[in-house]
Length: 176
Image (cartoon, rainbow, N blue to C red; front, side, top):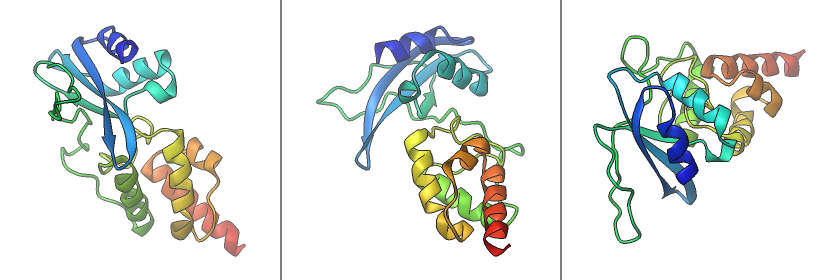
C-alpha cells in the first residue's frame, strides 16, 4: 500500500493520499483516498497511476475526501472515505443507454464494477476495471451478443458505446 500511497501523493493536484485493501464479494480491492485542491482531474490522476504502477496495484475503487484518515485496522471496519471521485455524466446525472445493447452492457458494467458507467464513453479501466474483470465481461457478453465476444475486441473499445458496437458487429458476423 505504501507504493500506491506514495504514487498518489506525487500526482498533480493531490495534497494527501491513503490506500487500503477492502474485501468485497470474495475479492480484495485496493481503495484509494485522496485530498486535493478544488478541481481534481480524475482522468489525469488515473493516467498518472497507470503510468507508474503495475495494473494490479492501480486502485479500482477510489474516493475523494476532505481529509484522509488512517486506514481501517483489523479491529476496525470503518472506511477512511465515502465519497466517490468518479466523474458524473455530462449533464451531472446518470448515463442513459442509447439502446438495449448499451443497457445490457451497462448492467454488466454495474455488476462487475459495483457502479454504473458515468457516460457512454467512460473507459472500463478508468472506472476501476482490470484484466480479470475484462475477461469476466467478455464471458458474460455472450448472451448479449449471441455468441462469444473476443477479449481483444473489448480491450480495443473499452467503453459502453464501444463494447455495445462490438456486440452489434459480433451479431452481424454470426448472421452473415
